[in-house]
Length: 474
Image (cartoon, rainbow, N blue to C red):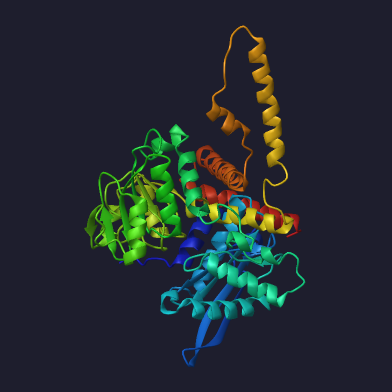
């Protein structure tokens, strides 16, 4: 029986496969690979009449750039190896999309569903206190963000806790990203990772050579898509590719099973059903399948694993029929399964790139907090004025001409409107995802020893991290 590598081992295996193709000194290779530090904290909170002890982690993988960046997850699956593997992925992810951060990750071993909102606030604030007093949450040193089990609410609590402990820090809002808009957040952050998945798929579809490797043609329209996990990332990815690009979401897999509809699922209605009932069972818009894992093996064009790591492994990799897999989650394919899928001709858009939309827009939010001004505030109306001058001149020329013509009201409305913060965020995210994909595919297609996009992504990322360390004299 073949032993399945752990998540951390999978990350190391993929790293090692890439560095074999590089000319790095052994010392520099080891410096990039290892995790710099991991802080473990155990703290008590008095809840329900007694003291409960919780265990949390904050890992810093690489400080070649600072601050370091990475989410905080609240889950019963949180343990040191997982946090360190995720921190390593963050280093490579930030390098790939050229966000100026090192890699970090945090986690608290807890089931958030067991505690009410007030209790979660007390737990979150105490965890934040333990990290803040050691500068493991700090605008210039370590900047967390939401992850599994956390969201805007937890980020608002953390930034408030930081402000209480650092009353004179003018940049306090930049100590975390993913905050609510009224607490210093940015438009488009909640949707960012799912939006990034959509942009990644659209960029892939721009290249006939890449689609041919996956046995696909055309655009995303009418493509048969299966989504595993309808949390924040899976929901937004499914919503955007179906509503905006015309893809057909034929199945959604959740913790209680799956729901299937060959004609396409209504993602909005399904999401409402999950919120109301806690699962996909009894959803009227499709057929319920109790064994959700089996639906991963259905025929489809595109498979989007958007939940936990390791869902595609040596036990099921040979039965995966998707032409293209895009890793919306972190590490959904183990290193062993990766090789099986590669052998079977499945093209994988790796997590390193595919879910980098979150950290990209977090970078925009961090910059917004440090500049203390929302994007578009200075230039939006000036852009509109310049556009109005052009339209006025066109109108004058039309009136002086023997041939009369008229610009449509719809065109004038679109042309005149200056970009607001959300449009600028989406533009920046689209540009980032395009550039990062092009850097990967260039390596993928130019080297015979690079078999897939994952290896290409690691090569690009590791070389950028190595260049950063070299510039520091290492």
